[in-house]
Length: 258
Ligand SMILES: [Zn+2]
Image (cartoon, rainbow, N blue to C red; front, side):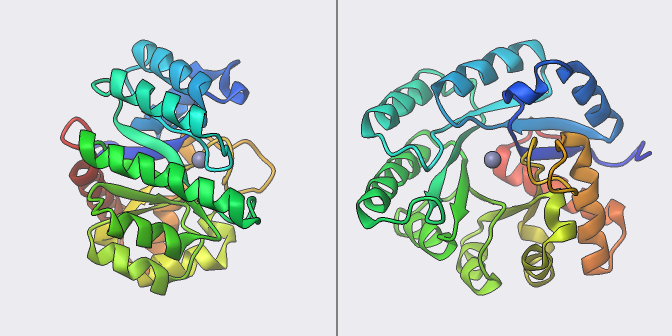
């Protein structure tokens, strides 16, 4: 359908999820047919991270990331994950997903642990020069503040649920915002796409969730749905959007994403 156009990257998906165990080959084939060249597969824990490395060894289009999901409030597991990332840094394309989730964690003691763990991953991202793939739920403004304070430079805010006013300091710092297919059913995400410059947008799917229909399994081929929504909201051609987000992806993740 998009033959001859720039290739796309799904910059945040969970291909290690057991929901993809039975038909991953077909899922990847549909992604290829939708012009998707690469998929950043993020991890929520050590088991995910190991599985993502294995998947990447078998399927070159899968690019592994390792991180600890923000609702896991365990300093020992956070240290183990940082050690894993150091050991495997040459194979990993990012640290993620990590961040803050104030929707799930509502008590201050838990939030404090969450912030400390997040700061540890932000610091490691700077130390290793690896992009950081950030989850921020009901904590967008704070996550951005922590990243700016730490001087983070290679940042992707995934499925950002805040206002554009909370996003703009991050845009000014050169951070990127990845837009999932659920943009078609989210007024908040549509507003965000309208207000943020195309030069700061990436495409993601967060497969198996955040698809165009709430309860159906999402997959990387649906990245094109996010492209189409951005094109509509910004009054541009899909090809222009693909060209721009491909360039943005290379600026964050490097030239192997082209
Ligand atoms: Zn995710």
